[in-house]
Image (cartoon, rainbow, N blue to C red; front, top):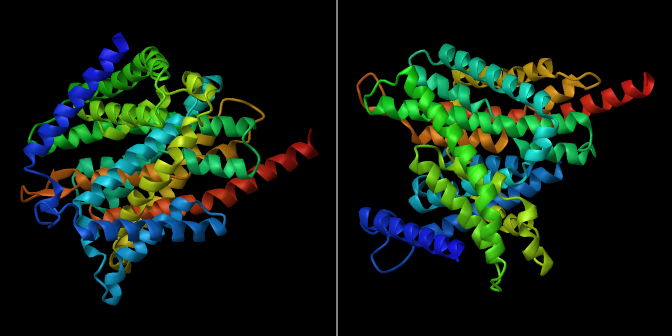
Length: 456
């Protein structure tokens, strides 16, 4: 009964908050999108979402046929339709700034981080604990300072916090892309794979903590408040306390919640409750000043398959399988929209190409420092370093957040932390690091396998 009362209370709080937000904005996105009152969604939104999904699937299919991640195809597809203006076609331009499509893209990013959290196993992380932790810390610190230095050199007029944020975009590692490569190579059970995946998950956690601190500092700067060292520590502690509280509290509350929900016979209860839990933690993260993706990631870590035995006993699919169609629908919208924001005209400037090249080298070399942090013997250090290279979806999510944050310029007006030029450089870095990893990791693992066979 206590759990049911808690559920009803949370629904009531969430409903009241949603209604207050709608009233505050004066009726919402229909007016902003240009639709007349009472006529529902602007038809441009419907046509735009349809076009984005078709482009995402076609470009994703094309890249998968070349054994590349579909996410890369979705990004390139977005770059393609976002730059049709180069040949005089402007039909896709309204989609870049449409509020509804932007909201759908944000939902895609939240669900994607929820999915990454679901695929993260705390037990496996602890099993290779100290090695994965040392690899992850090295893989965050080195790229962070290298990215900061590259940004300071190529963008001398930008604020210091902008350089720091660009360094933060290089911190995370794409768990999904690395896991996909290791699975294709049938190497998921190797010691190297377990170290890489454990370190990649810890990387994401540390990267999210860095993001929380830097975003808090940027918001304070825009508000005209100088952020002291103590306040930076408070933001970091708040982020860690939120993650720890979400995981520990969730471990206690969630099993009881889903045990009670198991008595419900309505179809889709497991998926609906899981997604609602994800959105609730994302909202709570935003409420305490953190990025919503931090809450979504925490929700994924909390939800363990062992908690869903009641649902499996009556023949329901695993949560990851139930969530896959939702992610397949929303996540591509995020990647296509990110690609659409890349302006290829900027790449005609040599200084941008130099910036993008230096940023990519910093991203690759920074992760190679990970190989020096491997504590165990008989482990292929080169493979570990290469496996940490791809940035993929997490790097784009960080860059997307940076495009929404503002810093005061010399005239006192606000300017995006990640402008269109910098976003293009980050997108190119993501593409290159994603492309080079599969063949390089395959070569490193096969070289180690031959070496072990020759010298048993």
